[in-house]
Length: 510
Ligand code: ADP
Image 1 (cartoon, rainbow, N blue to C red):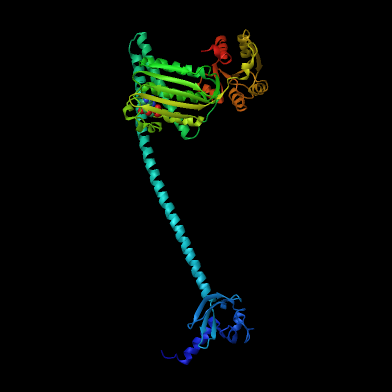
Image 2 (cartoon, rainbow, N blue to C red):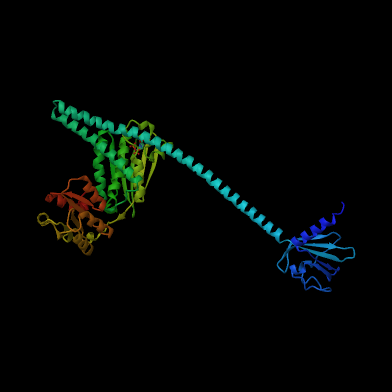
């Protein structure tokens, strides 16, 4: 290649000098400086003089082996702090030139480039993460959509089946009432009609209750309310409900309970609801044989088993039937909304218990319930000798107080009176009576709030609510507040004494 014109090469030289601040050191083979040229100031090397050993100032020279070819040490950080490209140019006599060219801009460019690369890498990683999240969200969305479709299908099925459920008993109620008005009938036929109307109305009521319970559970509104309960009585009541139903269908209904179950702390309303659901199913889905209700008690667990000799449940459906509105196809025509087991399971979960199923098609089904309880077998009043039972009566009406005193005067109880709920709470907590009769409507604090307060303070003796109201919801509210029993006013001597006896002398009440 021809030499560049002197004008151009001088321009280039000036340009390179301006941009790269070139400096040059000539060293002999031992690294001793012979001569120095160029912009030495820029690299803080202006103090170098011929004869100096260079390794002290340029430590990267140590150990460098030079051949014939030039060597480039790119972007080296100098002691001065400068970044430079170092060119080592050997000569034929063993000496060599050290050419220093400023690489600050190059270094900055590389750093910017590196930073950009890092940022791009980071963005890529983020993008990947977002894409993964997007995929995940899409999957979840698809799953949710499927669930929504499933729920909407179930809801449509539910509306269809629930309308049918309501229509059937309502049609029979309407038909019977019409016949009742129009026809001349003897008393026996009328009684039969009233009975059928009653059964249909009860069925509608239980449907409404179930649907409301389910909705309350969905809204998280139901909560457990434990109070002292005589288990013998709970299960005797349940037997009284199902014995005639079973007999009507030609089935045996057998209840066995452990001896001396005594009084326990449990949510009796919800316990009954579960056991009633299971017994009703057992009778509904059994055509011949028996339904058994077995009750046992550990220290802290109640075990209830409902066994039937019915059609059984196919293994494939044994989980599904615990979901709301799920029924076996074969049972589509029988009464039911498919909510009983779902509600029972939710109740038991709420109570800290469980529900399991063991069933063989053609042989029958066994539903096992466990519910945590606290035994109150030896409450304070058991330590009393007969004759010293201590009863607190909270009643604001003086006449009512006098009547109760009369009713109880021949009973071996020591009776104390207070006339408002606040006094009842204070008295009961200080004196620990064996039983409290609590009027529902009293000044300062009503009976329900007083009961709830006593239970929250750990008062475990039976509390019997007295109320003149006839509404069912008052009774439910009383039981939820923690009452053990409920008596409707006006009281008779017999009902009052019998109710008190049930709690203070349970051994005499089988
Ligand atoms: P329902 O009885 O109102 O349909 P459940 O939730 O109580 O609702 O029961 C769901 C389904 O489980 C019933 O429709 C029935 O098909 C089946 N099932 C429940 N209990 C039994 C039982 N003891 N024997 C046979 N099938 C049962």
